[in-house]
Image (tube, rainbow, N blue to C red; front, side, top):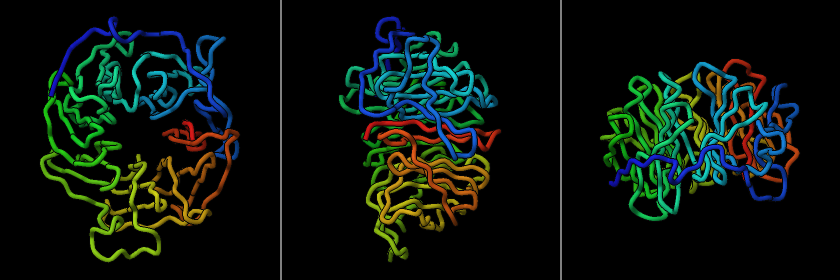
Amino acid sequence: MKKNIILFSAIFFLSAGCGIFGSSGILGTMKTTDGGSSWQQSNATEKSTVNISNLLVSEMGFEPGNHEVIYLASVNNGFWKSSDSAGKWKQILSKITAYDYFLDPTNTQNIFVTGTYNNHGRIVRSRDGGLTWEEVYSEASANNSVNSITANPANPRELFAALNSGVLIKSMDGGDTWLVVYDFKDQILKVRYNNKSIYVLSRTKGLSKSIDNGVKWNTLTDSLTGLGGIFSYTSRTVEQFYKLALDDQSSGVIFLTTNAGLYKTTDDGKNWQLQKLPVKNSAPRAIASTRGGMLAYTSIGNIVFKTLDGGKSWQTQPLTTTNVINKIIIDPLLAQVAYAGLIEQ
C-alpha cells in the first residue's frame, strides 16, 4: 500500500468557486422540522450568490455533541459544513470526489475525508477543522476509490477504511501509515464501528462483523442472500445491498436497504425481518434509525417513508424534486427534525 504526505495547496483548493454543473430537479439537501410532514430546501451558502441545489450528496452527519453542526460529502464538489442546522453551508474542501468522512469525537478539529482524486483513491486529513488539508493515503491502483472510513471511538487513532475493490485497510497511528486488514473480494459500500465491533457492508455479500479488530469476520446476512440454507422470507432473495443504518441509541438494531426490500434486525443479525413498506417489490435506498428502531426513515426515489412503531406502519411523503433521496439523518436531540441528501436518478 502506498502512502504519501502532500500539502493540499498543490492539489486541493480550499473555498474554491462553487461551479456545480446543472442537472434536472432539485439536488443538495432538504429539511423537515415537523417530523416529515413537509420538507424545504436547505441549500443556501455563506455566499449569497451561490447555493448547493446541484450538489450530489453521498454522506451527511452531525458533529458529536453539537446537533447544529452538519457535515456533507458530495461526489461532484467536495466536502461541506453547516454550523446552523443547514441554514447556510460552507465548502471546506474542494476538488475531491468525496464519498465518506470521519470526525474524531475526542477532537472535532481532526477530520478525515475519503474518495477519489485524479482517478485514484485518496484519504485526506485536516487537523484544524478544515482550514488546511494533507493527503495521508493514495491508492496505487487506478479506478479504486476509498469508499468509506470509520474509527474506534475509544481510540480514534485506530482507523479503518474501505476500498472499492473490497480491501479493508487500517491505521494505528491516526492515518500516518496504513496496512491491509482483509479482502472481502466484493465492493465495500460502508464501514462503521459500533459497540466495540466493526461492521462492513458489501454489495453482494451483505453485512459482516468483526469483534477482534478485523482479524476474523462473521457474515450476518447469509439468510438473506440464500447462503444460509432455505430462504424463509416470502420475498425475493437479496442480490444487491445498498445502505446500512446502525441505530444510534440501541446496539444490535440494524436496518439494511436492498434490491429485495428493507430488512431489520433487533438481535445483531441473528434474525432479519422484512419491513412491509406500502409499495410492492420496492427497492428502498436511504435509511436512518433511532430510538431502538422505533423511529426510522427510508426512501424510494423521491418519496420518504417514516415509521413511529418500529416498522409496523409507515407514513409517506413525496419531496418536491424529481431526483433520488440518497441519505437521511435524524437530529439526535430534536426527533422532529431530519435532513435528506439528494443525488441524480
